[in-house]
Length: 305
Image 1 (tube, rainbow, N blue to C red):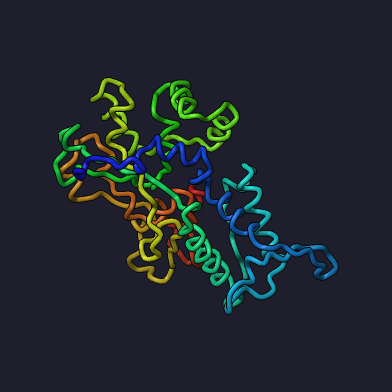
Image 2: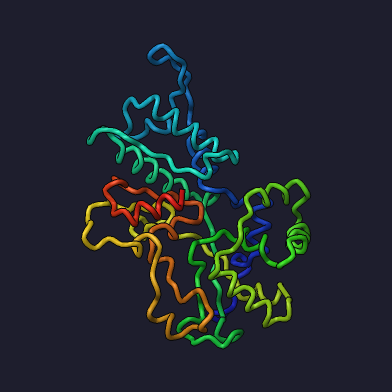
């Protein structure tokens, strides 16, 4: 098999069938985190005169969270609301308190558990990349492979295969999704990022609208879970204020891609250099000591949330 040939288990249609069979998941971050927490035992208790829930998820390991009953209940309520499509899905969860009371430990505990949770095969997140762009679109061999810069889920691509949404729905239905399953998928639909949309429609144009031919250049891959990469669980620390800039959050122009890509190609801008894009695919972004950031960075966060 050449580098451009795609194994059966890396094809979009295979991935969709695995999701349909329950072998792979299509979830946003809130849905995954809620499932992770609720898979553990939950105890009903009375604390300071009111009924609360004690989630055993937060009590695991030699170094775990002590107390924090109200905060844990507020967090789970927030995540549950977001998972069910409530107003929390458009918001951030902010912890406010004096130094040393456990805010950073709480978030890092959840992030570490989330990474461990996603390494379990049935929970793993997937994204996709374009391959063989040199053969199809005449790209320079150095940029013959291009990743989804925001680690978009393959199902997001499936819901945007055609300019007409009804055609995309027919394609998904042909795989075996019934009307209810299609409706559930589309409740989480969002447009493709400019970078992936550009490449996809370049391929569609090249193949005369033949989606099956264009899909021969789509390879489904697992999202990397390595903490050092900052994917899925990304932390932006406010320690170095001298050199921090919007580039740290959003990315910057890629010198190599500026030289090698078409003048209209949004992939000239390397989003993955930024902390926000690396967690865009069902991840969590943690900004430590957010109000110690420069004003322009705080404004970016306000736009995001």
